[in-house]
Image (cartoon, rainbow, N blue to C red):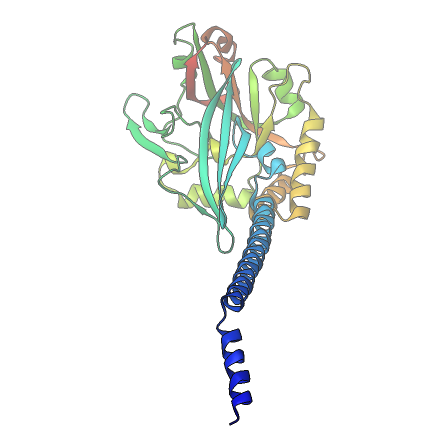
Length: 333
């Protein structure tokens, strides 16, 4: 190698190892690193936004699918109304809290609530440790029957007695109700000796202090099956929270046969929507059978009445009342 070539080689080596080149390389690497970090952060942010929005969209759809059906709530549960529902959102699930209320006299009380977890995928399930949709059952010697208590507020739950079924003992707790303190608001479930049309009921029971009406949806074959297969009065009662009927507490609008048609229309609408199909289908079958002799007018098996002891006195000794069960009681003020 000539001396000239050696000098050129040394110059190249000096250029590569020069501080200016090293600084330039470091600067370029830093720019690339920052660029890669920004790209990674941007990509991650976009993915997180897509993931969050996507999961919330799916969860909102699941909330709609599993939400309380307002139509069904209007006809299900004696003197129980759906009040409010709140949601606590996580990334992959929603915790839903539903509240139910009862109206007794002029007051409304929180009656029950349930907690459910709605996951992004999979079945909706109750959160058992938070759930209060439970009851305590106790045999009361004085009442001569099993009394069910709401485990949430320790108030009595109501039961209805079917017309036509035989019972060892029929309670008359309306007498107990009218002996309570004058500042107490009382709920009583009345069961009738025979089903009545709304026109008959309006004439005999009246409108005042009548909160809710229990509709006869049971077929003759179902009645016969209960009579033969169920042993014990407590097994042959209809729990208030399972009964079908409608609110009748409006002071402005008195209940009439139009309410009966609205009840049937509600059941038919629920069938179309596919909500609670088994229960609703059986109810419509029972109504169709039971209204053959009434020109399509629904029949009422019982009612929930509320008010003070003085207000409930007018229901005492009515001959068409077969049984009466004391429900929730609260202070008037």
